[in-house]
Amino acid sequence: MLTPPPGRRAVVVAGLRTPFAKAGTALRDATAGDLARHCTRELLYRTELSGGEVDEVIMGQVISSPLVYNIAREVSLLPQLPRTIPAYTLNRACASGAQAICNAADQIMAGHADVILAGGVDTLSDVPILHTRKVAQILQAATRTKSLRERLSLFAQIRAQDLKPVAPAIAEPSTGESMGQSAEKMAKENHISREAQDQLALMSHQRAAAATADGRITAEIAPWFGGPNMDQVITTDNLVRGDTSLDALGKLKPVFDRRYGSVTAGNASPLTDGASTTLIMAEEKARSLGYRPLTAIRSYAVAAVDPGWQLLMGPAYAVPRALKRAGISWQQLGLIEIHEAFAAQVLSNIQSWSSPAWAKRLGLPGPTGEVDWAITNVMGGSIAVGHPFGATGSRLVTTMSNEMMRRDVQFGLISICAQGGMGFALVLERVP
Ligand SMILES: CC(C)(COP(=O)(O)OP(=O)(O)OC[C@H]1O[C@@H](n2cnc3c(N)ncnc32)[C@H](O)[C@@H]1OP(=O)(O)O)[C@@H](O)C(=O)NCCC(=O)NCCS
Image (cartoon, rainbow, N blue to C red; front, side):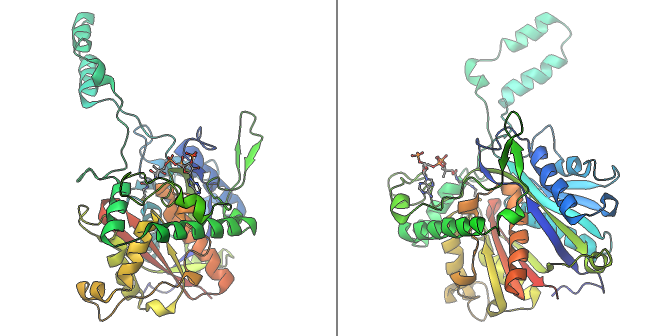
């Protein structure tokens, strides 16, 4: 277990996010900077934190713009903050927001900072669309030419097919396999049925709808003002389908293996726009400023598997590692949040935690633990609320911290699978 020096325990004070929206819909015209700055600004207002207290801003982003490559710095240039706050952006794929928070915790425990704004953002409505390498090389060469003739002869080399735009793929660079194809492979190899996947998706939507209706989710959302006259106020995520059913989910066609597959638009997380920010402080600092911390970061762990194997199985390794570092057992967990990239991935991960064969493979004395759905993803998950890659880790930390307070739970576990075969796990502890 990490033992921070006295007063240096890193605590979660508060967190806030934008509404999450299906890519191409309500937040289509917002940039990642707009979204990240919006929820951070509102977090500062709601916590009444003086900008001068902030030591650093850390943001996770997976698909960044070549025009704004350090989005965290754009956040730290909010008018509410002094212009002298350093900031950096990191990429741990879908665990980026959680990594930003753990980096903040490390900085705080090392005594390098007292107050850090950490979170993440992605907008799948605004992915960079690139030219082919050949066109880019010709355009670069054209800037070095001395005459119009030279330039025209360069441009004459461009063929119509060279102008086909290149968009980022949600696929592994090392294997070419998409996330969806990997989830499909995992469903087949781990014998995860279509029914089990749809059941999980249904639960995700029903729970997210309930937590939206009773205000637990909306309390974590900074309302977004949209429309040409800024008169459209968005206070909820637009992907939650409280009215979906097993029947409706069962009718959806598989997307990634149309013939024999089981992964559908209904049991996969959707492409999403959104941002989330969490306020992390040294415990002593939080108390001196009059805050009541929600939780403390007790431990975290990252693992990676061969991306060519089962791409989203990283949590099978990361979760037991984080529990060991936290010095607690699975049985001590009062809440669990599992990022739902795909239902097939969630069900594969939980199978590994409860499996004696997996325990042997990991050199553990016995299985990590059996998931109890009464304490797992109690407010739904990424299938229902959406998954703006960089933001999800921060959403999970905020949601879990608030729910741990409400339920008076001592320990909570967050599990996130990520591109590149990585898995991320984080243990939160309730602060008295
Ligand atoms: C799966 C995926 C391709 C689907 O994209 P899409 O086709 O734009 O999905 P849509 O939201 O339009 O849904 C398709 C259909 O399913 C329906 N549908 C989706 N979810 C549903 C639900 N819960 N209940 C009932 N119907 C549902 C939609 O209404 C739509 O129906 P329509 O065609 O009649 O309008 C896309 O979401 C995706 O790529 N997801 C994975 C993202 C990923 O890889 N993330 C990385 C994870 S780490």
